[in-house]
Amino acid sequence: MGLLSLRFSKVVPHISIETISASAVFFGYIWGWKLGFAFGFITGLAGYIYIGLVKLTTITKSLLMGFSGILGAIFAMIGFKFVPAFMISFLISSNLSYFIFSFISSDKLENLVHAYGDSIFSVIITMQLLNIIYILVQPLV
Image (tube, rainbow, N blue to C red; front, side, top):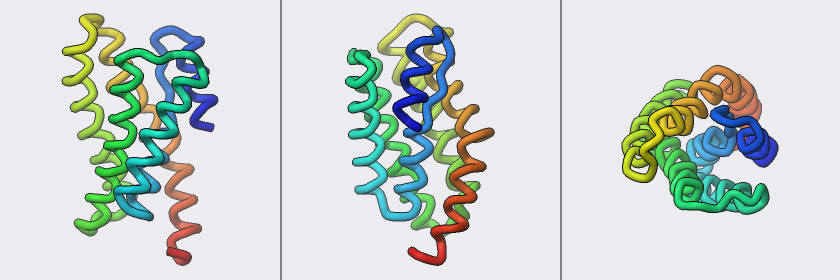
């Protein structure tokens, strides 16, 4: 699903839907920061390589995907429930993304889309699916 969302984001200009960061938060929340970071960074970078889009912004975005997994783990350790942890992780990650992308690219629209477009999609759509999965796997972990 993550690779398909990256491919769609490449084909349609200024549309950014990406589910790898959301999954990284999920993995980080459940299994810890190492798995959350590894999943976000490796899957994100592999996805961008797969669709032939490797440049400074995509490498940075892959690192931020991994950082999302670390945030998920931090909020789990603090004791936040999954949904608030997910939302706060994306709020922090989005603001950090916008700040970092402002140094990489001067295109404000592209920076806004990359920083906040993914987050809006993830909080509205992907979070619902991952919350259901979390409820199902919670007794197993």
